[in-house]
Amino acid sequence: MPQGQPASVPDDGLTTRQRRDRPLVVVHTGIGKGKSTAAFGLALRGWAQGWPIGVFQFVKSAKWKVGEEAALRALGRVHAETGAGGPVTWNKMGEGWSWVQRQISDSAESAREGWEQVKRDLAAATYTLYLLDEFTYPMKWGWVDTAEVVEVLRTRPGRQHVVITGRDAPPELIEAADLVTEMTKVKHPMDAGQKGQRGIEW
Image 1 (cartoon, rainbow, N blue to C red):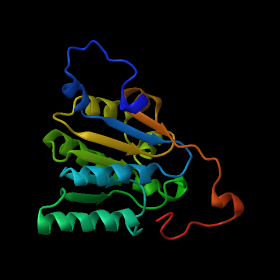
Image 2: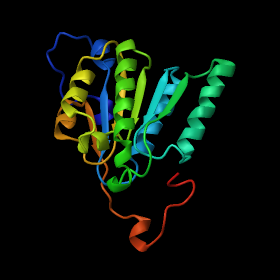
Image 3: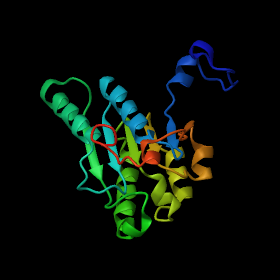
Image 4: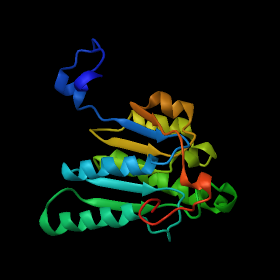
């Protein structure tokens, strides 16, 4: 795509503007670091455009304080106080760590409840950008039906963008998505025995 130009233009009867402004399903998957970080970067862009942002954080502990949450909540306050940017709503659905399933089996019901809320918000067109962080795991573990997710996303009304993060994105979701990025690991400090650090991992 040199200079942002598409490689081909489909004969779909849409104008350039109509095609450009279609709502997207975006998936960030793979074993590499940066899936959520990239998604929150999109949330920052959406906020600057004045979009209502809905963050739905699946699986990670409700007690875990991540930097992105503090930043986006602060931006939500900026919007409420000044009108700049867009409103931000942050929802936490689960407990424990996403990469250790044995520690989070009790989160299945929370994940299902979270998905039900996402469905209600999509039906009502509550947000312009939905960030479903770590949402591949409830699908992978069978807590949420992937076929239902794909159908709900396919039939969502209006212009609502949805970003989904997490390892092992189901093939059906990848097929249905408009943009899929797979993060691959080349090197990581943990390979050398270094644990995560403030400002980098959270």
